[in-house]
Length: 316
Image 1 (cartoon, rainbow, N blue to C red):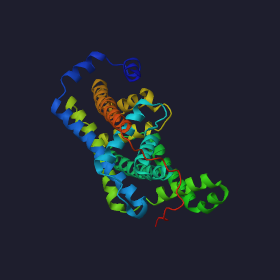
Image 2: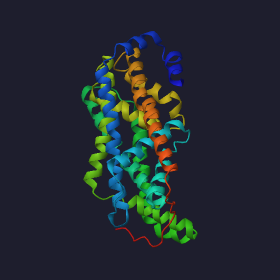
Image 3: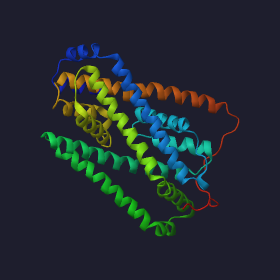
Image 4: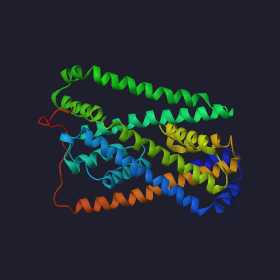
């Protein structure tokens, strides 16, 4: 609703023109966009499985790819219906409960996942900017600066984690020290099988870019690879801002796309893309969440969350 308000009141376009574009869109290309979108959960689930296996005791079995992909989808659903983006915390909580592994260690693998995502995102964003420079397209400098700050900050955090580990354990009380140690193991112990999880991460992001590209083609406009990459990743960057969920990100992406297509077409692309990436995730993720909740409530055995386990072997 907030997005439609921005589009009509601030973007100065006629809603009827958007409606005509939506009605004339190609359904088969939209189906292809949906397939691309949901394939990203398979890639992300497979990547998280690799990280869990790397950080697990004795490279234990972390669960199947579809199992991990389902938890990633549910985490996106939780992010979509909560204000504080609690999806990753819920994913870690659920996995910890069902596999009996330390919660802080699972949070560490998700932190490692976010680090990987940021560097892939930054690299792909630079590729799109290079393509823009080759064609003489002006790029908003503030997005480039914002994109560069995040990986630098994460590198600083990783460096601090490595340097101050012993000091943190010395000053933190026992339970907190154990929890931090598990988080440290989960985060830094995840970085094994580097080519595999990097490749899966790139495929996941490419699937999201392809979704936007095919949505645009379905509406009848060609935005090109550079704009598809730039708009998709800019949307991700803007979701990191406090107001990212109030229609501001969609309005900003529409404004970016209007640099290469007319406003009504840009608005149509963003509405359809949001319907796939947001509304459909609420429906499918919510259904999966409900099914898992019902099944877990009927399960006679529940594993408890382990905050720390002093007998767990040190990771290499």
